[in-house]
Length: 217
Ligand SMILES: [Zn+2]
Image (cartoon, rainbow, N blue to C red; front, side):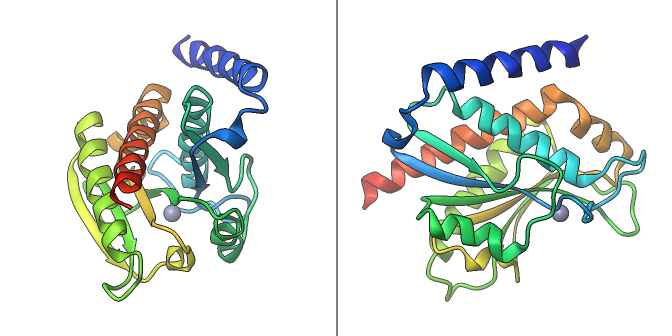
C-alpha cells in the first residue's frame, strides 16, 4: 500500500512537473547531472536478498529528479532513466557537454567479506592537485553528514579514490548510500520512504552548496 501511494505521488509529480514547469527549466539557475550508477548488463553489487545495486541507484536518482520538478532553482538531468548501461566517459561527458554546475553519481555499497559492514560514504576523485578538489571535499562532507543523520545510518566519512568522476569539469562526488551486502541495510535501501529521504537530503544539500558557492564567486 505504501509503495502504491508513492507510485501515485510520483506519477502526480511527473504530470505536474511536465505541465506546470514545462518550458521554465531553461531559466533555472543550476544544472546538475545526476548519475544512477551501473545499469543494463552491469548490475553493480548484489544484495544478500538478491537486490541489484543498479535498481536502488536508479530509484534514488528518479526520486531526486521528481523532487527537482518542484524546485525553482535546480534542473536535474539524469544520465539514465531506465535499465541500461552507459559508458563512464559518456556519463561525465554529458555533464561536460551541458556545462553542468555539478555532477553527482549515486551508488550503493557492498563489502566482499562482511555482512555486518553498513553506513553511508561519499567519495571524491583522487588527489588534492585536482582543480575541483577543494569544492569536492566541501560538498562530500556536507552530503556525508546530512544523509547519514537524516536516515540514521552509520557515518563512514568521505573517501578519496581513483574514480572516473575526475573527468568531470565541475565539482563531482559519488554517494554510496548504504551496503546492499548488509541484509538490514539492504531492506532499508529497498524501502521507497528511505530512498525518498536520501533523495530529499541530496537535493537540499546540493541546493545549499550551489547557492553558497555562487555567492562566494
Ligand atoms: Zn556501484
